[in-house]
Image (cartoon, rainbow, N blue to C red; front, top):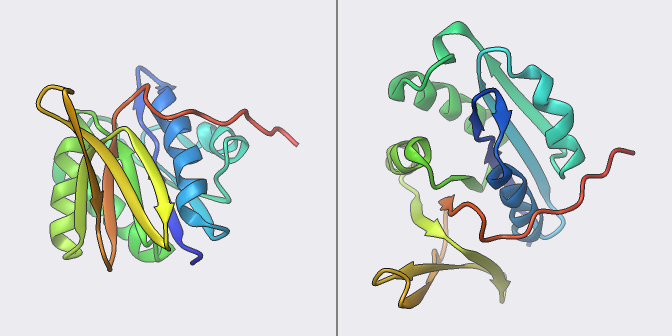
Length: 168
């Protein structure tokens, strides 16, 4: 089942964090031949678009505005909501960071979608996306499946593999 998967780039100190590349690789798996999109929100972020494309984004949406220079929940939510609607994304991935932990549930509620936090693995089984996440301080793990509809998920940094960049 081909899906459209959107990855919100995680930028800190004017650099893309590795969790962005890990999320793009997971998005490619989830998409199952569908499209993978990147989203850049911030000020002076358009220069990262090529990097997202090298790591697997088929298309990159850029919201480059002074208002997005620092994380402001309502501004980021409004900008990302517009990108989600424009792209028609079925799945939205973002870093399990302060921003992702705040933004994912807010947008999931707006879209009346399922949301899984702090994922450390993703598989597609029988056409359904299965997320693994730790519980009990990492002593046990759960497998979460959102049966239908849109999905929001936050990705724990340094747990998923990143693909090698393709600069061709």
